[in-house]
Image 1 (tube, rainbow, N blue to C red):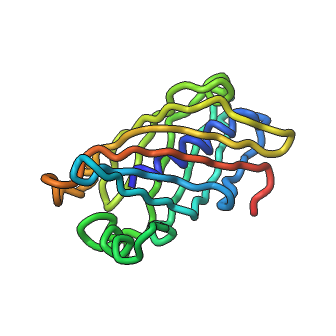
Image 2 (image 1 turned 90 degrees about the vertical axis):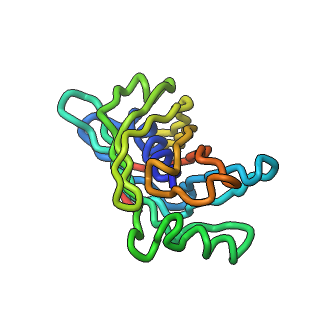
Image 3 (image 1 turned 120 degrees about the vertical axis):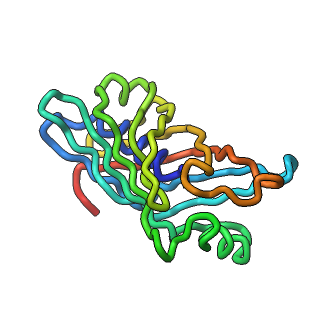
Length: 184
């Protein structure tokens, strides 16, 4: 759920290596967003969203904006029963809200290159909330970059309020976003 924001964050960080006038596209493969949420304070439930699309768009002032979309149904988990439960109405409600959408605030190339904070807006389950992630330094070649970001979100801020007695409200996110100059 918060993975979408992290994915977008990573993509944006990679964009800092692009020429200011050129847009970078998120490569769905190998990009992914991982999440972990504690169950009964003993076990962590993990999931991975494997379809991330979007772009890192340059602004006239030289800063970049990440616009990323994550397909909810691209979720993979160890258990198919758990996956169905997580995608159902109680959590992601993927039937009604098939896409998570992150748009970053404009960010400098220095932040994208060296790491730092990436802030923006995440829309999930019809709720749009501010989010913030920590970017790691980007790894780039001439035409592609890999960005990684970490963050934490509260699921209750996006209407996922069930099972508080056994399931943590805090969700850990880890994004790995690949961007390239050419769209897939």
